[in-house]
Length: 157
Length: 110
Image (tube, rainbow over all chains, first blue to last red; front, side):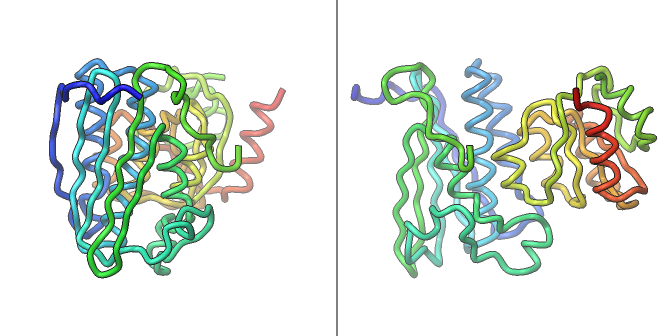
């Protein structure tokens, strides 16, 4: 695997712990990627990854941030939050598992597909968490096809 | 079939007109946003009970042909304003999801 190419663009977006402004970062990320001439399929996948990550930060954490890095060969989205952290990462990667409260489920969140959707739309997906500290995710979407390109299969397809 | 024709045949109310000349590929019924993100296809008409701001974001992310709010539920002016800004078509029906989906299936199935 060749080392990552130089960053062409980088921006940090704070994400608050409420649903009022949720969705704004993913809208902005898509706008930026399109204006940089990133391939439409990459914009589409990055938009979904960003939206799901943004919703997770807004719904389940004390707040955090998303960093967008655009490189010649890839788009990276780095998510980090200030906790509470996830005890069992394998469990949250399972489709259908959710800790969403009832009020969030009534709004159509908590399907237990957020993290599986993020993983399915990324070519590389790395997640670390420590209870009491927070969670970090690095999602990478490649812009050119090579052996690792194509992403994972979407859940249920 | 064009969205304008679907609207006419189903008697849908147009709350926000986006691109009414678009072709409707198929329909998708879900109130779970992640389910829509994972499984809806571009050009689908999304039938739902959800009517908050994130519906517009999901509709835009997936490139659905439009959103149909069923059972007489209408989104707030704030949501409609966002849809207008994003160019997302928002439609409404007094009928329930089953009836709207059934009629749409009748129109679109080969």
